[in-house]
Length: 80
Image (cartoon, rainbow, N blue to C red):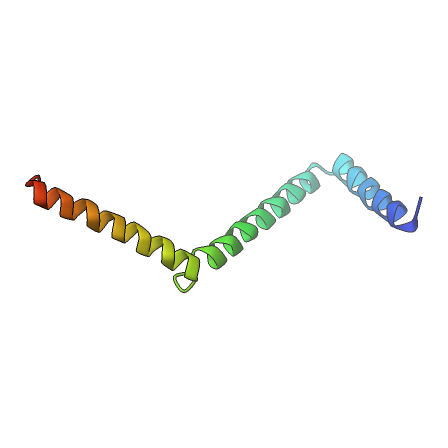
């Protein structure tokens, strides 16, 4: 085994010992995992759902054109 695997084993062994000794440490690890998850979701929303993103602008434009066609059809049929 390489040094990399020994280092990983040591880190995880220390984490297991700390969790076994202090239950609050397990809660701390859980909170850090939630923070990472929230930051990943935030980055996704900032990148993909930003109004200046061309793909998002195209999706909004397409949805608007589709709604415009439906409304025109409803007005012509006299439903509105």
